[in-house]
Length: 419
Image (cartoon, rainbow, N blue to C red; front, side, top):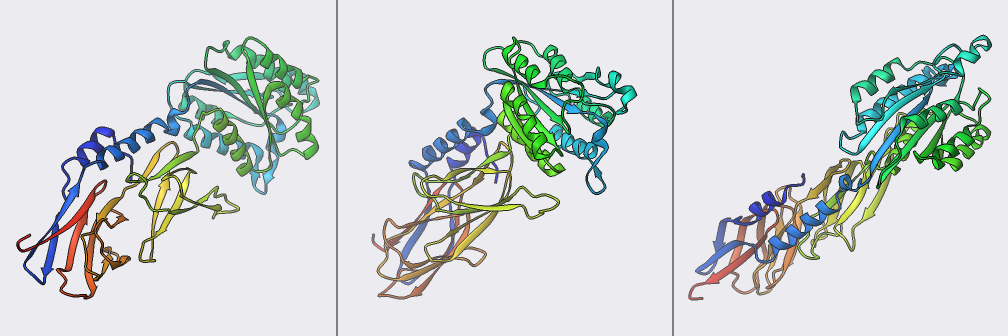
């Protein structure tokens, strides 16, 4: 169930009528079903406006300039897991990042490598320690160039982290108002070219380009990871560790989410009529990995609000109808989008103590009780069947089928002869 534009939503609400079939009456009477618009169109339209105003994809007010700075040293050829080298893992993660980055104005992503010349042998150290290149400039989102850079990314030499940070200063311009410059440095080792990366990160942060430096250590020991902390401290960013491809993926997306380059959450909204909506429990599975294909499961119950922000993934939404039976549907939460669960109200006529049952087409019992004037039930749009279960006196309504349309309140009205 997808979001719709305000104009389409308004047009859909105005003029919708619900009609009934199969009415059986004991006394001469007329029964009608009308789709009520008064107040509901404005309520729903306000909810739609609220969804648009808080859409996660619109949260990125600032321009963001990000440079991915990746280690191309020879140690990246080591296996991170059996049969998978660090460089292979890094390439897979980089391609995931490229796929996820939105091609929108205000997001600019570049790619720089270091240690990609010479070799990791002592005789080639001098050459390798002078190697760093901006492969893709920080100018928009050129996914073809980024993928080509990943394809040619290979493990070669030593680890000139300081040089890479110093040279990266030339890749940025001084930021304007509401503009962010950031480096995401990925390394599988410490500085091996006698530089001071902490001082280089400090110079970037305090210089005209005002670059924030984030550090991700890949396959490092705890002691080595702690050594990188001064880079993050001096650069004003995070220091994250990754021991596998999955953890590298999480670390990179954590940084890119903080920078508001990518959105890994979406909104679930259940259609409400004023404060009428089911207090549903939402159970989601997210973060699936090769080692944990089922991912992590968490639940949240809607109480005061019909709207919740969730991680991307598949979620089950369930609630209890007044009958006590449970209704469940499955939804797909997509990044930066609002997933709607459309609803409808079925309003009851005055009864005389009769017991009625309402079932949906799947046979789930929605209601099993008396009808009272002013009573109602929130339901999913669809066709519902009403049946008289317990006769009291001389009931008018025996059975009926009614179609309830999204965004409407369907009123059941019964008139006896002469009324």
